[in-house]
Length: 287
Image (tube, rainbow, N blue to C red):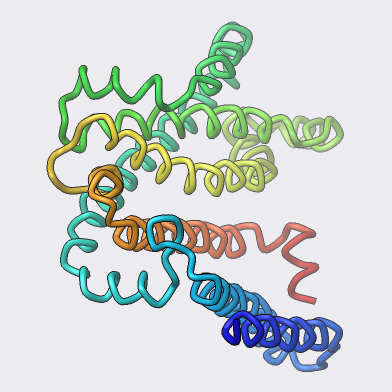
């Protein structure tokens, strides 16, 4: 019971400290950025301490929920296995499928923009396919492309293609009619209007799709590995270790997947800030 009380006291102290930090109004931009990093970091550490204290204090069975210290020990002790799973799932399946799916979606969106027939015929089909559950698509892709990583790439392509398609088409129509009329008065061609006006206006929508797809791609690849894969991969490891009751290994894989997804999302967000520096939301963060 002492561990539970100690965890609760630590949580209350960290909560109050975070409340004090978020109310600060530092004049230095560097100090403000440091606070922005410290607040979620302290919050995350607080959750881990609370988790550890409650699980050990109430003696929760490891099968139900292992403490973070046990997960960390398993993670450090299984780095070669986790690295091999990371390479198979993230570096092969996720990145390849992400690039192909987003790239195809962007190219098809440009084609749809030039063709009203495709816009009326393909977009409703895209909305239909994007609503299909991954657990229904994955077994079919495994039967078509085999048990290795190409079948997982196919699942990721399907999951990322249509969000990119829909967001890009929406973004290309974001420019106002007044701005388009101005381009016509300059005798700008369709390509010039696309590159100088409509595509820059669509960047926030495109990056929105890229950020959504950064998490969808990882989820799709891991779920697809449940339906057949070589003896390596995050999804394979999770499904296998659950059957063996090695719950700490399952949570170690989940932690690696969470870190990979967060890093992927953060990288896309940083690129977005660099590309859309002119957007009001980004300018507001820099002022």
